[in-house]
Image (cartoon, rainbow, N blue to C red; front, side):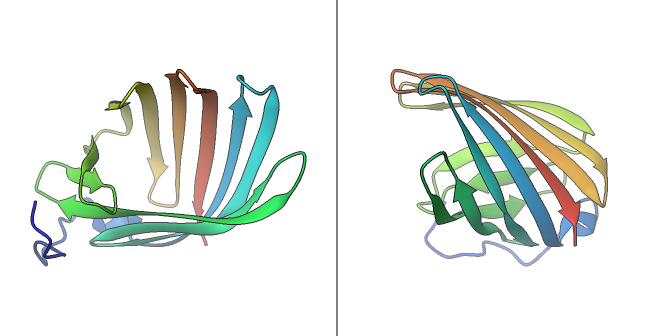
Length: 142
C-alpha cells in the first residue's frame, strides 16, 4: 500500500448502491466495565472512504466521536484500511459475512448483514486483556 490515495478511481457496481449518507445507531455492551454505551450519528461512504461522526453517550457524559477508514474496491471485495493504511478487514459481496481481525492482543470477531441497499448492520465481539464488549450498529439510508 502506498501513501497515494485513492489508489484507483474505479468503483465496482456492487459497491455503488452503498455510497452516500447513512444514519447510524450503535449500542455497545461493555462487559468489562458493566456499562452501556450508545452512539448516534451519520456515516458517509465514498468510493474511497468510510467516515462516521456523531455523539457517544455513556452513564457519565456525551462526547463527539468520529472514525475514518480508507476503502480499496476490487472486483470481488472491498478492503478496509485504517487511516495509517494498515489493513483492517475485507468485505465481500455476500449478504451475511463473518470477519476476524487480530489487533495486537485484541481479537475482533464481526458479522455484517446487508439487508438491502437502504439498510445494513454490523456486529462485533471484542476480547482482549483490557477489552470485552459487544457492539451492534444499524445503518439506514438518510
